Image (cartoon, rainbow, N blue to C red; front, side, top):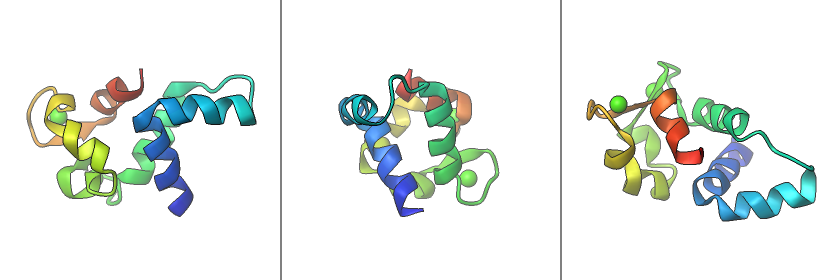
Length: 85
Ligand SMILES: [Ca+2]
Ligand SMILES: [Ca+2]
């Protein structure tokens, strides 16, 4: 789970992910990475990320309201994917 948090942080920051991708593989499919990061953050596996779940990634908390398109206080996978697309 520690590794997942690191991966997500890299995803949110985007630039480190690019550097990482160059080291480890020719290409990284961002949607797949976003999906695994979403799963890692969704601790109760209800299919959405609540604010408490987002606390693990300060950068995500900062953008939470912006990313939460329908303002229901949760990020769906679709809303979350906007971050990394
Ligand atoms: Ca959840
Ligand atoms: Ca939402």
